[in-house]
Length: 313
Image (cartoon, rainbow, N blue to C red):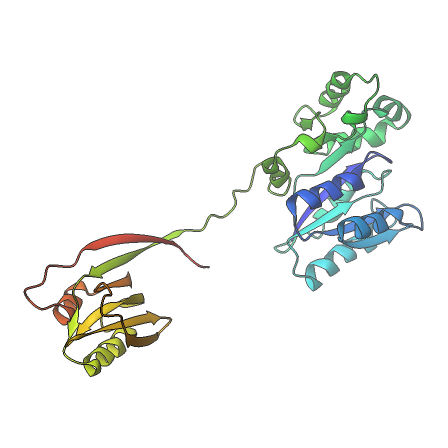
């Protein structure tokens, strides 16, 4: 389970950002909210508007007095839910450094912290940092990404001045000064891939497995019984690992259609005007044995090719 902390001062827009991230990425998040008051209004907003699963921890700050309950909540979620991402929204008056340290105590194979995000409202940033310098400095200094949340509603605010102040506190932070609604989808995905050391986890790409493909244009058998014996040998891997085969072959004066898939086969009479030909797909195909079995000596050699298929994991 990967844990993403989204911090920020009271009213910065954390809940709105989380809702937007859920809508855009369409992931099955669980939100662990820490509300300083006994009533958690944001929980209802997230549940009703986004359908998200929300765990709440009220009245105790997860930075200090409630840190034990907080750790137990995370462990409970990790051990009881098959979950990929847990979003932690601390109270707006919580120190981000303390939240990080508390989660660090319980990190193990199943719990990994992602690079934290801090949300800032530029409209009241200078006022808040003057009134609560230690708190806001901590939230900025300990974040990997700083997002200015209400740039689209700013009035007479020098956004560049806000950015300069943030850079002075955390020169290494990734600062997003345009409203996040304009972010491309890849940037939202990156929030869930960026590790605490700043590196980006490369998503696993399905490896490709190369299969052989052999085509036989003019297969013939003396009788239906010979076709059945051949198909039985085929699914028993007498001719290699054939995972798919189909086609139409001649039997005396008739045409017979066959289909092989998942270790089973079926045969039926084909239309007399059907085109004759067979295809075999798999690996370690014994092409020579197939040619001897299917083709009279006078027929042309079958063609060979390659087929790519995404491996199933």
